[in-house]
Amino acid sequence: MILQSLKMAWKSIKSNKMRSFLTMLGIIIGVISLVVLVSLANGATSSVTDSISSLGSNLLTVSISDDKGNPIKLSELSEITAQETIDEVAPVAQSSATASSTYSEEDAAVIGTTGSYYAIQGLELGNGRFIMNTDVDNHTNVAVINHDAAVEIMGRSNVVGESIKLNGTDFLIVGVLAEEESGTDSSSQNYEVYIPYTALIRLTDSVSTDITSFCASAVSEDSLDEAENALTNYLLSRFSSDEDAFTVVNQSSILEAMESVTNTMALMLGGIAAISLLVGGIGIMNIMLVSVTERTREIGIRKAIGAGRWTIMLQFLIEALMVSLLGCAIGIGGSWLIIEIIDIIGGVDYGMSMGVVTLSILFSLVIGVLFGIYPANKAARKKPIEALRYTG
Image 1 (cartoon, one colour):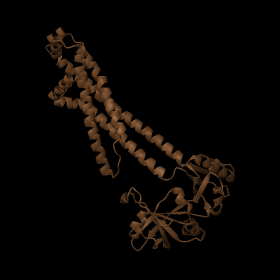
Image 2 (cartoon, helix red, strand yellow):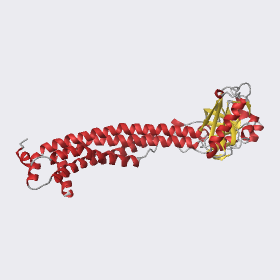
Image 3 (spheres, rainbow, N blue to C red):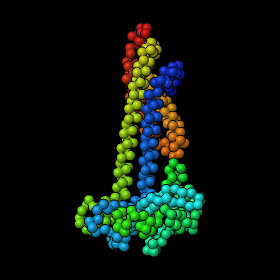
């Protein structure tokens, strides 16, 4: 009986191709909206989460706005590492400079720090070494540059042992960072040069021996909150218990907040797209009601030769389900095509979320049943005599 109902439903859909397609259109648009929007939101969430996680899940960043006349000096950072829960500390000062070589010249961000910065930030070297504490102590003019700076300013990636000029001052390149996974597209190139903190003091007047920003790492991810508390207590005791004198940023807190925001965005986009599916379901119900009216005599004949109420109801319910699921299938195919085009144009890999695909199938199934029951029930309740008398 079900097989026969499927054949009849398919025959009905084929006999009115344009009307069937227009009926499916609401479901197609709804599924495309749901799958594409949520997949893009999930892809963006994953990208942002990976970017934040790559900075380290046990990272603490401190910015000092008011030192209360008692600034932290470079030599005093060791007092912070004396805390049991804090592993390493590195000062961070940034300035801009003209980086040049015989090959090219570009504006670059110059970061002054110490050897601990490498481990705290989870950097990766492609060639050479990173800044060492002896370089800081001896005020040595050495530099570590990122891959983009090596290729665009120096002309090739492995330039360890060569010199780069920063605002006209020669610095010996002792290391080159590994190329980032995002590649070296010209629209997203960042030129970064890492030099000893003491060398940056000599290079620019905007940086002094007073530490206004530094990063620290906890002994482990589990002790991150304890490390934050220890660091906060140390700074409070140093800056007259003024909480406004400094800011401590917990990397895991940023990650949690970002995930919460992006998940809310995905939910909101999914809700908006789901409205399109509901509209598509209403379209299915309207067309099925028209179909019931058009096929009133057919219903009367089938009932007259013995077809039961359940048989008639099943026929129209299957037809509504078939329209809904066919629209869903076309929508999923269209979603895959759109996401692939976005990936090619944007140069990223969002990927289709299989969870959302499954959800859209279930949603379409529910809509097919929900909006198909009323027309099917209306058809099943028609009395044979009245149906046969119907002339349209």
